[in-house]
Each structure stands twice: as structure tokens, then as C-alpha cells.
Image 1 (cartoon, rainbow, N blue to C red):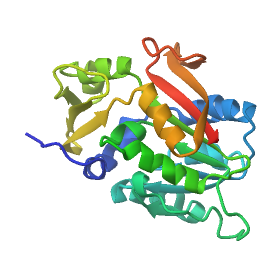
Image 2: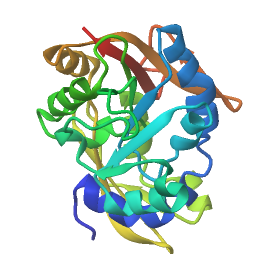
Image 3: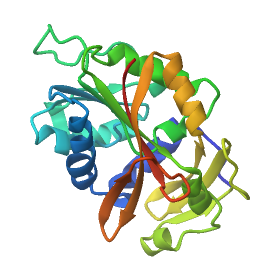
Length: 264
């Protein structure tokens, strides 16, 4: 049986099939048509974006097509290699752990630009941070890279309802229909706990994913400890191909909470 491993090791194995596995996730719809307008309502100014945990670069196109400059970073060299094949030199890429973000240069062509207008941490990045103190380390790096005057950050956190749905079902019929097998290794979902599942298939080396459910109280405390404040916490759900955001978030109905954050 595959043993629990780091997010880096899991995603190096996952990289070969990541885009195929997530083909149904429409980033133009999610980021371009839903999340960016929410950010603009709260004063987002177009400029330079840092995509933390960028993976294969699925968020790049909606930003590039709207005139953003984009920088990506990820802990997985395998995922970054896939992003580089797709985007070449258009997006600078850095092999970095989200918990150890240095001050990154937004634009080599504009030395006067010292911070990012937008920092994105999307698609379960927060939930792959599983140790006590990881959130604080992540948000310290976000604060380090965010424009103090008008910068905004956005991230999603999976709700306990999602953990119950994903990590307590022994197998996933939906994943099986696409030629993959997801098998939960967690007997009972528990708020604030670490949960495990094993992914396998004909095109991917079997590996284990470990995610932690972070409570809203833990997230807000980690933000406040790093001089950040949540402007919004929106419950995300899907209905008939549409992505819906609700304020306030109902974590019993929503599968994700979308946090929009600014310097305090």
C-alpha cells in the first residue's frame, strides 16, 4: 500500500495526469468570470499577480488574456515542468514551498514594481498545508509579497462538508468513470483533522494525498497574526454548471469558502 507522503511528492506523481484529471474544472469560468469580478468589487487594480501553488498553470490564461503580468510558484518540479511546456517564457516560474515564500520580484521589466497587486492561492493549496503553524507561514509570505496600499489576496478553503463527501466515501464513482480510482483512507471525517486518500490509475503512479480541514477560526487567527484581514468569506457551490457565491458562507451547504484578503 502507498504510504502517506508530502504534497510535493504526491504532485510530482500527479503531474503526468493533472490536466486530464481536472479537465472539467473551467478556470475561465471560475477565476475569469466569477472570482475576478468579486475582487474588482473590492478595489482590485490590474497589474502583477503571483499564483502560489500554480501547478500546471491553469489560472494563467484567464489572467494573461485580461492583461495581467503573472508569476507562478509551486513546490512540485513536475507540475512546474508542465506549466513551462504550456507557457514557456511568458510566465516566470519559481520552485518554492508556499510556506517559505521570499519576497519575489513581480516584473523583471519594471524594477520600480516591488509587490504584487494580486496573490492567488487556489484549488486546495491551503488544505495541503497540514502542520500546526503552516497557515501562519503561508500568510507571512503573502503579506511579504502583497502591495500594502491596494493589494488583494484570494484563496479557497474546503469546508467540512466537502471533507465528509470526499474523504469518507470508500471509492468515487465519478473518478472511476474517468479511468482513475480514488479510495479514501480515512474512516471518519473530523473537523480540524488530517484526512487521506489514495489516487491510482493506468497513467499515474499510485500515491497518497493528505489534506487538513482548517476551521474558519483557525484561518482568521492566522490571518490576523500576520497583519491581514478578510474582506469577505464567500460560500461557493455549483448548480447546473454555474458557480454560485453566497455571503455569508454556509459551511454546511458550500464545498469551499472563498476568502478575499487585504493588509490590515
